[in-house]
Length: 270
Image 1 (cartoon, rainbow, N blue to C red):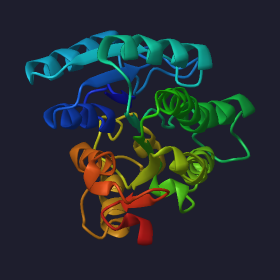
Image 2: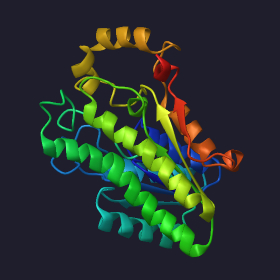
Image 3: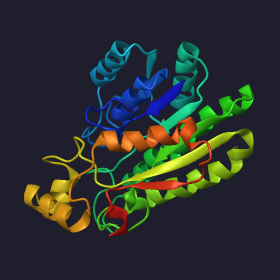
Image 4: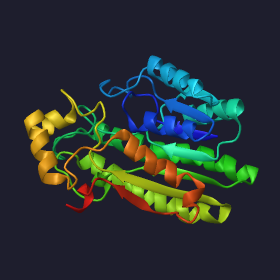
């Protein structure tokens, strides 16, 4: 069974990954918070309807599917969700940790101005959440004596600095070192752990009132950013990132662990 966090939001990496895994024949458990994260704005947050629609889409493909809601930064909620979907679909052997992000009211702005609680929230959902989900799933893999594969989503922001995204940069850099440490500790148990580092992805977060409008001054600013920053000259699709995640979760990548794979249309090297 494959567990995908941050799965429900339309036009997202999580949703694209859940669908791609289902097309590949996996039973898929879709996990999302489906409510505003703590007291952060609801921008970018999936709803219960989004989760139900994704489940129906996967079921239409003919694959087994289950859904659960949880705040990935809450250990009790994570444990309950993993236990629930494992009871429905069987042992988890593949994990895609995609829940995360930043945005207005959620760690965006000059480092000297970000409230401490916002900074902590960004670390909680991106780093602590990745660790808690991995911990819950890997403990079950070890107890069952089976191997598995985990893929975490970091970012190009985990490898280079971006003004006004300091909390997010710190969090995504943390995901990379967390990935490598987990790969070192879990490798002897037959569990491979990798990360992908996307560039700027064309999801619903790239729109009016998003952090990109604040950072770049609207569509014209975004167009100039693409020309300046992205060698391939375009935003990436969620499906492109999902393809890399699914490869790292597949047997084709059985010799790969501890890597942070750039999937950034060349943006990471600029």
